[in-house]
Length: 331
Ligand SMILES: NC(=O)c1ccc[n+]([C@@H]2O[C@H](COP(=O)([O-])OP(=O)(O)OC[C@H]3O[C@@H](n4cnc5c(N)ncnc54)[C@H](OP(=O)(O)O)[C@@H]3O)[C@@H](O)[C@H]2O)c1
Image 1: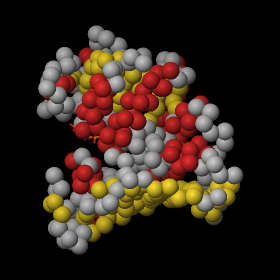
Image 2 (image 1 turned 90 degrees about the vertical axis):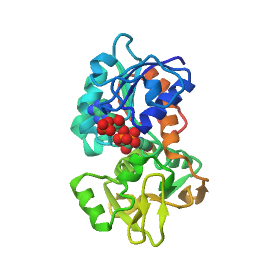
Image 3 (image 1 turned 30 degrees about the horizontal axis):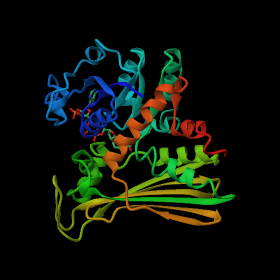
Image 4 (image 1 turned 120 degrees about the vertical axis):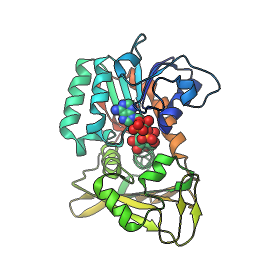
């Protein structure tokens, strides 16, 4: 499907989105960013291509939507829906569908139920579709385990773990998990909201449960830094013994007092990478992968889902709507 796309946010993920959109044969009609280093430059230069694309990165989003209206906005600016809201609302008002890496948009009914309702109404009124997705949340710890549960006649518990080598990730990722900080610095920055570590544990638990039709009554989220015993060096940070090498976090979903879903994400410099999904029930099965590159995976999920979003009925969607619409799962 040939698509006209606008890149909203040209950070490392937005840059990958632009590259992958071009590989898919999509036409990039505009780009928006607020970073003065990028504004006014050709998108090709900003994302490190050898050629100009004839698309100037605009600070003023109104200018980026002219002269050609995009079919869909590929959005990658923030993890928080309240911050992303004006950008998404403007895109809808311009008549464009939106697909976003915003973690809290992947299941917005948990943290922002009132914004979810507003976005759904607004998108319907303008006959466009809005979806938040990515690799995590969006696929590895929610959509994928739900799909893997299909051959089970009874599911008692699902556990999904993802371990990544944080040293291989982009700078903004390494920064948000506090690499090289002391535990005190990490806790201080977390409490000030200066860093977030992983965002989206509860969203993944709810998304997985929604696809499978599980009744979750309570979700717990936990996250803690991991202190290094050795020295490590990434492209961006030096990690001395006693400083932070990564984070381990989890989301646990309960039905009443019973734990039925547990997802974990460990991002540690120097770690072996894998995903492991254990579906307990009848039968009990363990799946294990060799690891999925997170940044490339996110960009691929977004550009692969973009045509589906354009074709979908209007309103606010989650990955649950797309999995169910595929008739893959009858649960
Ligand atoms: N769901 C998933 O699986 C998944 C996976 C990867 C990433 N993500 C999320 O995707 C988002 C993008 O990732 P990233 O690493 O590329 O983030 P990033 O390094 O923070 O880049 C975001 C870019 O957007 C710009 N920006 C911020 N606010 C803007 C606004 N109001 N209008 C236009 N541009 C704006 C930023 O400019 P400044 O630098 O000047 O602020 C920056 O250039 C993050 O929130 C990340 O957590 C989700």
